[in-house]
Amino acid sequence: MALRGKAQVLMGKNTMIRKKVKQMIEENPSMEASLSQLMPALVGNIGFVFTDGDLKDIRDIINNYTVPAAARAGVMSSIDVQVPAGPTGLDPAQTSFFQALNVPTKINKGSIEILTAQTVISVGTRVGSSEAALLNKLGMKPFTYGLKMIKVFEGGLFPVDVLEIGDSDLMASFGAGMAMIASVSLACGILNEASFPHVVLNSFKDLLAVAVETDYDFKEADATKAYLKDPSAFASATPSAAATPAAGGATPAAAAAAVVEDEEEEEDIGFDLFD
Image 1 (cartoon, rainbow, N blue to C red):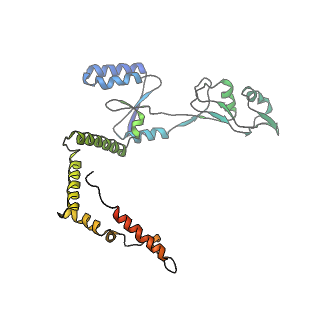
Image 2: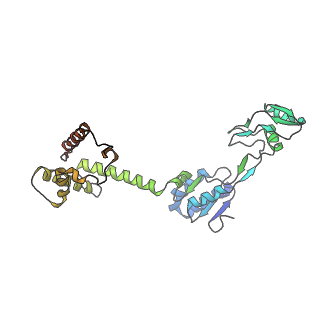
Image 3: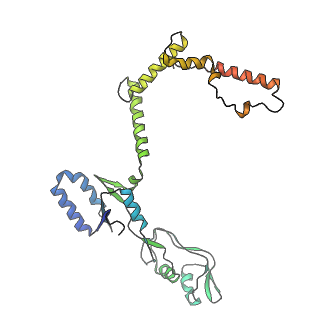
């Protein structure tokens, strides 16, 4: 009901679905490459969900609708099932179920009490008749039933994990590819849209380096030359906590040390722009 107007669920026998897919391939040979990928997936208890909407929204709706189910003998368990410690409300005549599963119990006030929590069913094992009977007597419904999206078909068959790929992932992958193209192009001396910005930037760095080392001036180099001439003019107007003098004023030794440190920073600030 939640999918009405958004998607359509189709269930059917796999043999009939395979026959229909083969018929579609015969009628549309150009779709053989994509439709043939469906054939290996037509195994087991499966169905189709057709939609023109957002696949992530459809998946979320499907995952929201599950119902609890009791344990049935012979069913393969997909989870670990544990019975908690404490009173069960069962009369002592039911002790045999707990003994068969090696669950420690005692009789307390005329009913069975489980001493410690025990795992009665492990993931990947089949539910036995004793486990199913015990869980049913305890009123436990450890399993859930519902639809689970396992594959996505859109021009080809993909794992459902592709729905987790967002715009940021695509842009990161695209950016990494562009960076690789730019690196190869620069190394080979090939000029293209990826390498051109780097060529212009490297050329500007060369021009800036020449302007710094000579008396040649141009507008874009003025800021760099001004900084090299007087770095203190570009310092933040807000003094840092470390620069605030303590009560009583800074000692002459501390002031001298600060001056020496500033001079060392000025000496090391030269740009090696020719690298």
